[in-house]
Image (cartoon, rainbow, N blue to C red; front, side, top):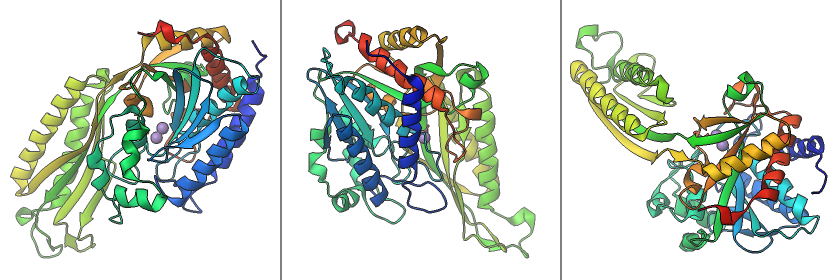
Length: 414
Ligand code: HGY
Ligand code: MN
Ligand code: MN
C-alpha cells in the first residue's frame, strides 16, 4: 500500500474547500444555489480538480460533475456543492474534495482496482433554490420526479427554464441515471453537523441510518385589521394562531425525543406585514424528522389535528401541503463494517451514529448499498459560517476513505 500522509491530505482538503468556499452569489455571506452562475463556477473548479487528479470528467443533464477513474462496476463517492443561505464551507464540499483526493491516490499511482471510481459533485442537495431537494442525486439514482421540473424559485423561474439557462436539456435527465448493477456502492464523507463526535472525543463516525423527513408549507388565513381599533376578543390574528401552531409542533416533537424526533419552523412570512396591521395571512414551513417513519407520519397527523383545533378556536382558516418527503435510509452494514475496519486500522475508535441531517446518501440507497463517514465538526455547528472541521480530522477521513477503497470488494455486497 502506498504511504499515506493524513496531515498533507488534510491541508490540501482545507485549501480546496476554502477555494470553493470563496464562490458565492453575495459578498458578505456564502450563497451558492443550484443552476446559478455560482454553481457553474463551482462545477468548473471541481472539474479542474478532477482532471488534475487524473480523472476523466463529464457533466450530466442536471449539472452533476462526474469524475471517472478505472473500469468496471462503479464505486461512487460524492456529495453536494450547493449551499444553504449564509452557509459554512464544509457542508457538502468536504465530501467532493475527499472523493477527488482519494481517487487521485490511485490514479497517480496508476493502480488498477477491481472496480472503477466515480466522484460525484451534486448541484442540489439543500433545496435552497427550488421547493424540492436532492434533485441531482435523485437523477443519478434513477428516481428523479419529473414534477420537480415545473417547480419555480422565488423569482418564478421554473427548474426547466433554469436548466435551459444553464445550458442543459431536461430531456437528458433519464440519461443521468446509473444502470441497474452499474453502481456497486455509494460512499459519502460529510461533517457530522452535530455534537456527538466532539462529545465522544472521536474524529470520525460511521453512519447507521439517515432520518426520514417531511417538509411542509402551512398557510393560516385570518382577518387583517387596524392594530389600534380591533379589540383583542374580536380579532382573527393569523400570526398569533401560527405562533400557537408552532408551539404545538414543538411539544409534539418533544413527545418522541427517544426516536430523535425534531420539529422546526424555519421560515415564517406574515402579511401585509405592517407594524399597525393585524396579520391577515401567514405562511410558514415545517421540517419534521424522526428515525422511525411511522412515528413521523403519526406526529404530522397529530400536528394537523391540533392546528385545525387552534384555527377553529380563533376563527382562522388553515391548510398544509407537503413539498418534500423522504423515508429513513439505512446504511449498508457491509459498508459500515468496511469503514469501521478502516477507521480502526488508522488507530481510532469508530463511533456508529445516526444522521439527523439529510444527505445525498439518503437517496443513493435507492440505487445501491450506501454508507457515510462523518467528520467531527466544532461545536456541532453547521448551516452557519462558523462551521469548522480540522485539518487533522479531514486528513484522517480521507486516509480512511483510501484504506476503505483498498479493501472494498463489490462481490461481498448483496
Ligand atoms: O436539511 C438537511 O438536513 C440537509 O442539510 N440538507
Ligand atoms: Mn446542509
Ligand atoms: Mn450536506
